[in-house]
Image (cartoon, one colour):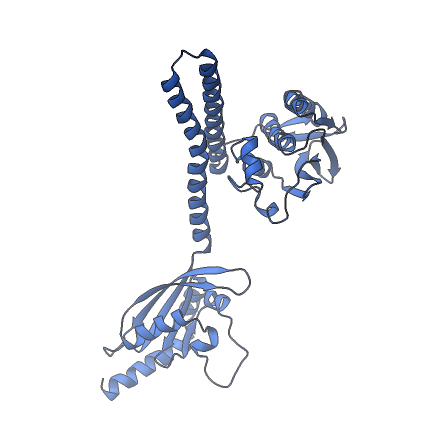
Length: 361
């Protein structure tokens, strides 16, 4: 590299770092990706606003800002050094652990101007936190789905093999096998139904048909369906919703919400326990609560109980059946109505699920 070329490169880099051109500044400000340009001494020449949110500059000092002032991550430093010394591009994963964890895909590229040797390196930081979360959710979903399918399918195969061995010569044994096959087929049917329902809700296919509903009457209709299940376990249910409260909701979907919550309140209760449904006005909303005297939910599990297939009390959950999707469906249906759902629970003392709906008063 001749002295003239070296001088030209220095002039270009100086102009790059201090260019007042408004178009250049506007482009940098509009970028969602973080952009860093450093020279061969790793002095920071350009740092756009998105990069400043990733690497806030330190307090003003007398010396120029260096890459080490922004981050000490060895992979980032190694990537820039390879681009500057070897002239090769590098892609890497960078995780920012300050505050809420953030993950970035980083592409570092050498910059060549008048000379053949790179005089600067460009780093572009693209945030992939949400993408990694979605990928993790996808992996967990298919892993849990395969596990949920495996149990009833294994039972069905076992019943079929037994029938093949004993035939129909033993009517009582055959009857028990057929009853088992029916139960497991019902379980698979419920799982497929809930998966389809949840997929339609999450994709926005489901449209609500809102109507003014007398809440006490609708709750009573749901309890008529659920009471036989409660009576089998000696669990009492009380409808404590005031008769004058009306809500704006889809009757079918609200019934689905209440059925899922009440079903859980009964399944995870204790013999002789109690389930209550209450409601009260709060401004322009109605807060509806389903309480039980059951086994409760450990604090560590409470933030995750609305996830698909999540089971806190795993052994107990599988004994009671269900698809593991009920609370996920409830959460999405409540949000579709413009409300929120919360849970309060104490292990050994019971749980309270509260969700909000718009009042029709």
